[in-house]
Image (tube, rainbow, N blue to C red; front, side):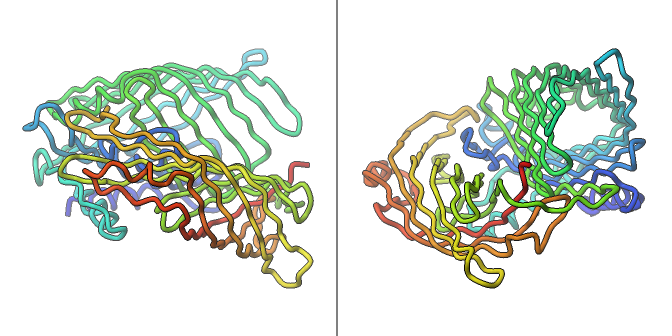
Length: 444
């Protein structure tokens, strides 16, 4: 019943929006494992959830953020536990021009809920599906939850730095949020944003955030300590795919999101070519997510950069977690002369494999037990399909790639020296398979 309350709120929020009138419609899965290889993942605090935003023209926007929050490593053992949080709000932006500056103010009004909404069930299903150890953290007050009014005010002052084939903006941003009896939050900082038409944008932000806890929840007090401090965030959109990551630079805690951003445009934008191809997908048996960005020098030859990342518990009883990263640069060749929508591809890359083993005895900061970096290489072959605009939207051609081959790791035995934990064994030569989504766009 508790989880149905939040599901009903989400359905009501989106069902009232006519899809043909929405100019922004975004849904994301959030998880602290979406580190993009930047930081370690303690699998704690704001650990998992969902986020969604929908707007009607420029007038109204409805947003939902639902999070499962755990307190597994508090130095006070009797304070450990979990709670769920949702924030549902409507907003309307107000904008004006001041000389060359644009001032945007956006008030939000809605509700904030905290307690036992049953989000643990979703986490358990995910862990069972991928064979991961269950996160043991009971609800602080099982069966109880509360809902309170919520308000937030955002303000941005942006300066257009460049206008041409792309747009570059520099902005100052501030926001404050308040939910009586639950929390108060303030943020101040700035960001640099680059956009290229509808399908491509990226925003890099830096600032300071403070979260004040207004209830007696030990888990929220724990969260407040780790979400207060200097903060960096990255938001990226490539066509229908959207990514975000928020990282506290003082506590090294962060969480990210991966999802779909479907914007309604007034006119059809045709695909003109794939000078740039971006791939996202799964790597097996490394059990990680990967992202590659590839520049095509010719219709056949491309150079790419990429990273693969993943984390998992190595031994729950001793709270060991291993964080794995592969950073690669390489080249691939597509045999475009063959007929049909299948394009055979051969790829060769080299870079570094990094493994970090961390023990979390009494905090989410952790203690590094092992940190190994060694040369790695990968040779794969497979197919990409379709790649020439057969499936396109807003100037981007979408397709799939399936590649298999082998990975080489120098001094692989160095990754297997720590015997006290069940670390994933690294072999000198191991099989590998990549399955991903490709998005190609023109840079002209």
